[in-house]
Length: 252
Image 1 (cartoon, rainbow, N blue to C red):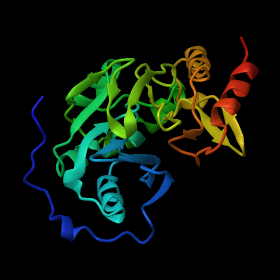
Image 2: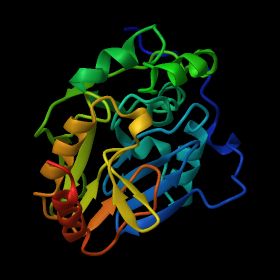
Image 3: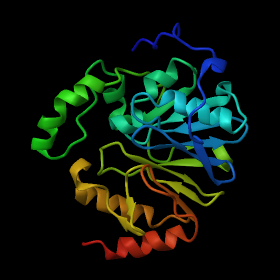
Image 4: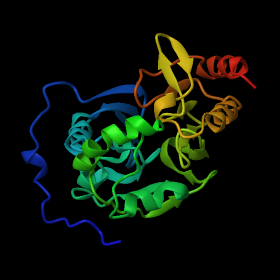
């Protein structure tokens, strides 16, 4: 696929400041970014790894967050997408017009992002999918470049080591990011955290709930203290104990 054109890159100084603080620090070196329709993350050490890019129109928010922590967009080295739903990958073409960072997504969903065809409809319910189809086609961000096809067990050096965990169910190529040296797990949409309770991914947007449940059980085997989601506030203490208790409560 042809690399997106770079001729529309705005000057960094021309980005307008947002009316709210664009990010918060979760743990040292990890920032949650408020994007359109979801949350992205900045993993910050010598370079910056961006986890997810929000819905279309989120690219400027991510760059503003980078500026807010005193870094430059040239510091962004990698962009990792947890899955190919529009609220996670919609800002990718926009961001790629401004930064040349290497981009990765699981092999199972790379073609969905690279293709000239619209992104897959996220609704698992057939009627809702049909009702929302016209809107989704109207806001589809178009194709983006994928440089790395991720697989389970792949590792990156960010924050002492970031490991790719394949957690299918919500989508076929959903991934989580585990930072064992920092005790952090980013799960994307593999779980929800509503009203102080862990829950499986939303049924309306999950392709295979049985597979999603099996993925939660796999995550429960990992060690971590902090758990980060794409739509909810993080759990910052004893998160692995909570996930193990939650996994035991799930139906066989």
